[in-house]
Image (cartoon, rainbow, N blue to C red; front, side, top):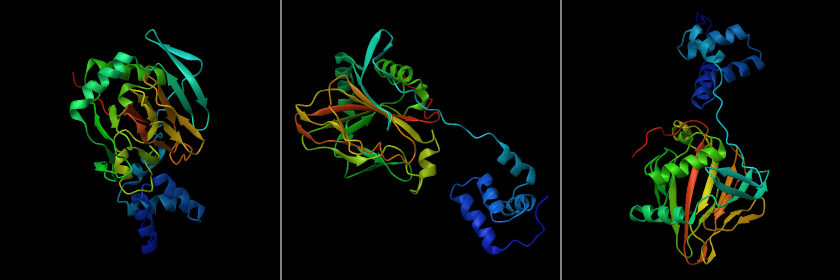
Length: 284
């Protein structure tokens, strides 16, 4: 039964604006109870404002919360996957960060570069609507592989999934980036800011980002490392190695930057992990 009590316009507007901002019905009811509303009366009012039956509202509140998956952090000294020894060279606890040597073979690095070259374009970032956009902070060229696009991509994705104990479908498509001298990616976070417009659109498929893996496909002659200014760490770009780091929404310690290449060029492949399945379709 819905409320027959008069509902103040300001209360109606607050309920609508609060739920439209992404707050759950359960959170709205809790806030109303904390300000003195009777729980049964609150349920009736909220059901009326949201134009939903009490039974549907109760089912919504009582439904179990969807818990996003988290990655496993590789532990020193090494992990062996499909006969390949991957060495943990550096471990940091906050943020959870690992430098991984020998993640990729020389042949795999070379093959990834060659497969990516014909499709390179100005690297983009994700805008507030979930679409790609040019960003002045990122001056490299890049491209994305589809999940499972080739035997090489499938093999690398399977290795990452085993290494981090997370299904392949929780990863975004592998991105390859190419940096020339002077090019860089200024300090940024990989998680999506809930306060930014379009957060719901960006996270509708796959949820929030929870971890990143940056793989180095060559060794620049100078520069090009990955800096973590909040913890005073710079990871050297060495062919076949990678840096993995996990984070929670709002985590500032995971701030990082792709430092300018001083001499030569830099090739990297990046895999972003999501809390829920991101893409299930595959090619090839």
